[in-house]
Image 1 (cartoon, rainbow, N blue to C red):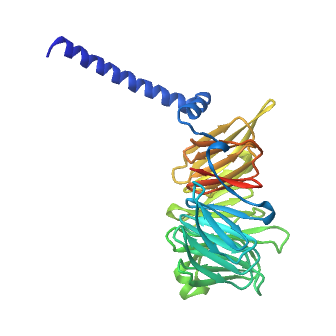
Image 2: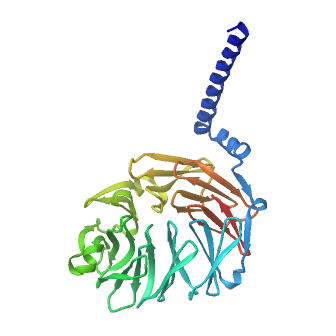
Image 3: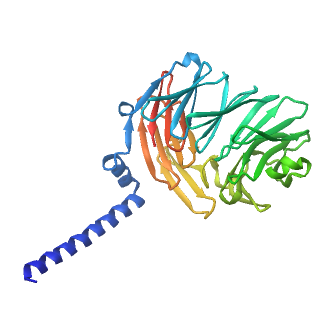
Length: 383
């Protein structure tokens, strides 16, 4: 080997070392310096998008269209027709849906659509309508787990609340009856074994919130003995939302904080009054997200804290402004700050920043797409 070859190898080694050091420096700056991260996202990674470079679908606000996002689609319900669009704005399929005032729920590839205060309910998987059912009473709330099991909260019968559970094929599995309490929310575990129901009792001078966990197998064979656990919350703690995460952890939002219910043990993980939380959501995969407003003189900073419910690790995304609305789904979080939307993931990283020429009123979001809703159109963003 001659001297020239040795010199070339040394230069190559030095270049590799310098490249690694430069990469480490860039990563460190990206993680630790918000101004550098903003510059890098905008100019290098091209995460900033505007109204000029995304697909849109025209709507007529006078026709009162209802818009929802699930899986990789944005769905628009108008005049009893559900039309679904891809992220490119292409019309993918249509379904005849006998609903004029809809409530929605989605999970994985499934979308449930029901008539608010009505009887009709539909389950759709990607592009296929799997089933349609009519129930007795008035539908108040719906839920679907990632495997297509559906729970429906119904009022207006001889009972105060009835919860109906359906299989993915549309078979009614069982009904759960509450005579004196009102069901606020329900969720079915990822392994399809348990139905959890959040209920409140307002008959006394103080509010009593309870969570009942029901064995789906027992409920089909021995309904009277299907409740395997009941948790009574502290008096006057108002239950608002529940969601199953992995390992059958049931994450519960009260007006006072966020709790985890697992193996018949309750643990408070976030105290709203102590932390001064302004918004919270459990509609994420194994995470909860909540916001904290930090005032500094004339300016308001907002921290979005994204907490892993398995490891309790927290990721933080900071905005130098107040947040008007927060929307969550699966691994995505949309932060509406007026004429901008920051889409972030559960790692606390910016996915995309959307810049609008006007005030943003509403956003729909799923695990793959988002829709920015205006009076005359819906702009679709691929996440």
